[in-house]
Image 1: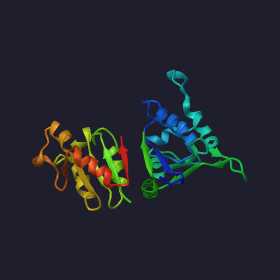
Image 2: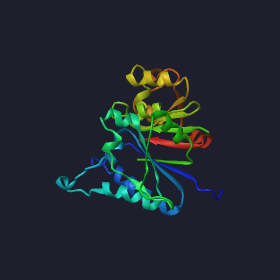
Image 3: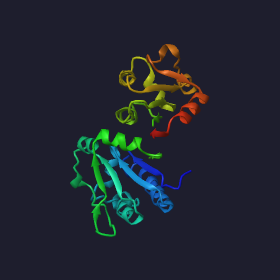
Image 4: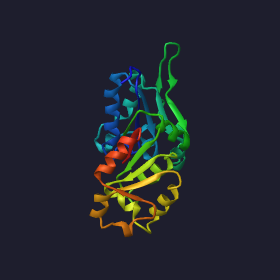
Amino acid sequence: MSDEARKFLYVNRKAPHGSIYALESLEVVLIGAAFEQDVSLAFLDDGVFQIVKGQDTKGIATKNFSNTYRALGDYDVRKLYVEQESLDERGLTVDDLMELTHDTDDEDDLTSIIVVNRSEMAKIMSEQDVILSF
Amino acid sequence: MSTLHTVNKSPFDGTSLTSCLAHCLPGDAVILIEDGVVAARKGTAAATAIEASLAQCKVYVLGPDAAARGMNGETLATGVETVDYGGFVELAATHDRTQSWL
């Protein structure tokens, strides 16, 4: 195995509160971030709902983990790929998503959200060493 | 560099298969497992999509899962190949990565 960081992509395709997939994915990402891999996240299909802003789970008595996505930047997870077609199909735009950012040595609050089309997403997937699906 | 995609949900239960086929690249392979195998039943709406994608990627069904659901060579969509567990392992080993469509 080479010393170079391996490319890990976490693929998120489920809406956040109806099943455990989204929360599990986020927890695995945060744990995995400690291993200094080259980590990216992909949000497509209903997965785009995971990072919609204004989520309020008080009424369903579950943990509102949506704010935890804001911590990703602090764990050096800086590439959140969001599929344009998946947003379009759901009547969403990038303005409906949370502002998820990271800091670099030179600059603060750079956006981590990268909107890509479906064929760009397919290409990103094909460039990974490991793909973990949720 | 190629990917083995696995699909384990019925195409009538969500977007797993549709999304998988939409992200498949030339040279990739798709294996239908568990409830995913019903997509390869001849004559279903999903089989049409599968046959259309055969031009750029290979499509397999896991034989034991298909047999368990009453499918055999005669009820399988044209161009779909059947593999056993050993064949599944072989596919996983001969592609660069696997991607699960859940």
